[in-house]
Structures are given as structure tokens and as C-alpha cells.
Image 1 (cartoon, one colour):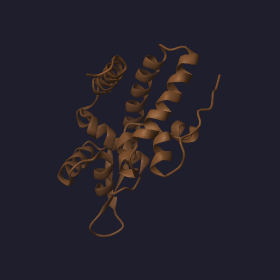
Image 2 (cartoon, helix red, strand yellow):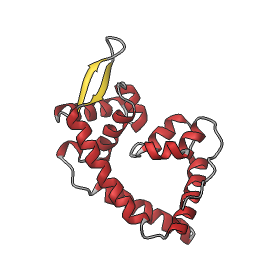
Image 3 (spheres, one colour):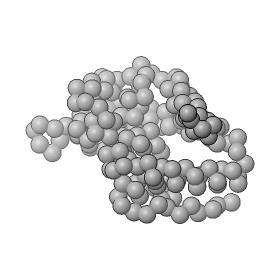
Image 4 (tube, rainbow, N blue to C red):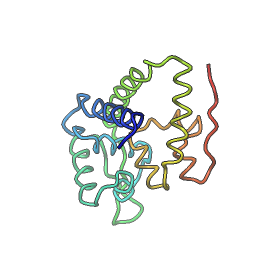
Length: 178
């Protein structure tokens, strides 16, 4: 039987994912997979469909379908890859604008949820999340899947526990900021 803290964490995780899923999106971004694909292509510009498949933990046909939908919507371009068998995926100007809109909505929702805590509670939560995520990260492909909807800039600057674990670095030390 689950402990109350485990149930509460599960409920909060589902709430956050439901909120992200329920944000109004154009048809091309109706699923979380396509939003994650848009973010992954932004993080890994020029990536191949195979890299995208790995990041999103999809089978090859599903990755091809996701890319096709994003290309048809004008959000992603398929440029020449490093050889004749591959393509390099890049965001179009429209894709970058849509990603910014998606991430702004995500950020606003997360700020609302975390904003229910005072500063000391936020610091405590951050330290606990760093510890849990560092221990739960298995390897580099897993780290890419965990962070598929992340705004990686601030996290990497602060010392991302997922990235650190995946690259064999120690758990980041939480820096208390006031």
C-alpha cells in the first residue's frame, strides 16, 4: 500500500501533466508527444529522426509520423542530413514562435503551482526534487526523455541533477538563494 506522501506526489504529478495536456494548442500540437518533439528539436537543432525517436522513446514509424505532422503544419523543416539517408530537423520561424507560446503556458502553470509555497518552502522543495531526480536518472537516453518538456536553460545553469547523473557528475549541491 502506498504511503500518503507517495499518493500525494502521484496526484501532483498527474495534475501537472493534465494541466500541460489541457492547454489550448493547434491541432499539430494536440498531443504531448508533438510538443515534446518541438522542444527536442529546439534543444537538438539539426537532429535526425533517429535522435528524436530516442529522446521521445518512440518507435521509428511513430517518430516519422510526428515529424510529418510538424512539417505539414510548417513548424519543422527537414533539411539535408549528414548523409543521403538522414534529414536534419530544425524549427521554422513559426515553430520557434509556437514553442515559445507552449513554454510560456507551461511556465505560467508551474509558477502558479509552485507559487503556492513561500520562499523557504520552495527552497526545500527544490533541494528534495534535485535529490529525487538525480537518483531516478538511469542514463543519457533516459535523461533526454525525462527532460523532454523542460526549459533547460535555467536548469543547466544551476546544475541539472538529471544531466549531472547522466554524465557521471555528482548530485548538484542546492545553492540557497533568497
